[in-house]
Image (cartoon, rainbow, N blue to C red):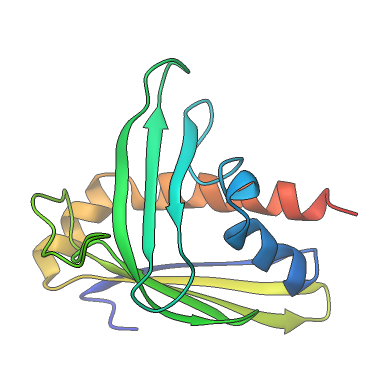
Length: 156
């Protein structure tokens, strides 16, 4: 991680990796935590393979869903790592416009208390990193991660 270009968060989720993985890979589960409540998420495409589409919609009021993320998976290592970018859209075209172009790496490792969950979000330059930070990276991604933990920890 380069602190001048990247943002990160880490959390121990008190659930096995397989449950955390399922929360990422099952569209009906991803919709339950991917955006900070009370906003709602709809997964349009979740093709978990390198080159596969990651497309979601967002609703702030519960009625109309608007585009949220149109991204492409770069790497998927079952139960270990998911890498996606919004710099390339789901049709493999350069994305335009995006609020902040980034590549996110999610890693899952075993931990005595469950799963060591880490996200590193890479940016192309310090200005993009600062902009993403100012947009509320810590609060937004932190809230979504807390929702993920609540979902995973409540799963039998």
